Length: 431
Image (tube, rainbow, N blue to C red):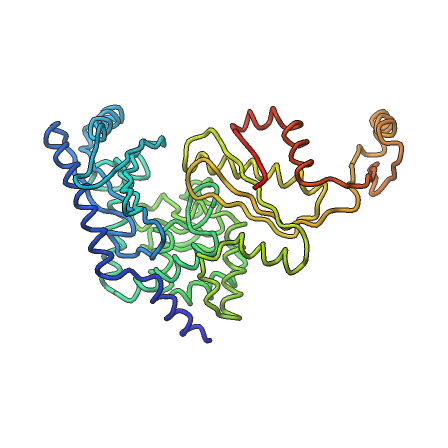
């Protein structure tokens, strides 16, 4: 199957029908009506609009949809006033005819999640400021209105770009690099949309980005005359990512600032793989990474294991980041006893994450001691480890390993009790 055939088939799978968009629009309008009634009753000067992928018609078909609604408050209001008004709006908030659940999420500016249980849809209502120019923004979310306006205008000029965006989003989602959250460090939806507007197609996007070796600089609106001007004027803290993607609506912002080199390298490897051997599996986000690891373990006849960790921290970016950090500690400790052939961290939402491993038991465990010139430390190491050797100027000891994962976990929890408490880890178990 060639690239064109794969992309055509994928588009048929992920593109929402007019009826599906109509349903999402209907549910959005019900929430908007409920909020507008509260705004009027409590005499709050604010307007609400549909944002994100729904507004731009760049949603990909998924088991669950997150829809962004932005509540634009008059800029005369202080942050405390906005916070208090939001509490009043969402206190005992209901959508007529539907079972709903509302949850406040803490952030740089608290926002609200409204769950429509029957439909499995989450609406995120984000408070922003009703400003006329980006320079007036107090928070990054205040720019959302301008983002929707810019992308929508560009897509209306070239309607084919919407399909290209869907393909890019599906690819990134499947490859685990869709999301600017700190536990993903990938491409935000807005970043993907801008990249497609710049490269004009998904194929061109992966062709160009997968072969790049240097930092990529993209300035769609030509805010800067030269790259040197950009480097001089941009805050150095915003220049650390492998792609510098200047926000067309606000020249001081790098839209790809969250992208890590590790995530970008994974994207490039997947892009090269798809271009060389195109196949539907590159877009198969229903087949999780865990399934792939299980297949590898079965093929190699080695150990496949899954750990589940739970945090006390707030659901979302905070919980995800904390769990990711903890998973790195777990991985480091496991590597003392097992060769790690493959592993994957999986977190979507909530307070729980799964860490998958493909493992092969080591015959011996290497314990690394001090450098040989540190005489007192070396003597102390020898007393503790009578069987020892030196390598590369360091004293080491090798011990045979015959430990099961259950025994490893029991020892890990005992020796890392303080660390788990400090990292707000409530539970870790094998499943």
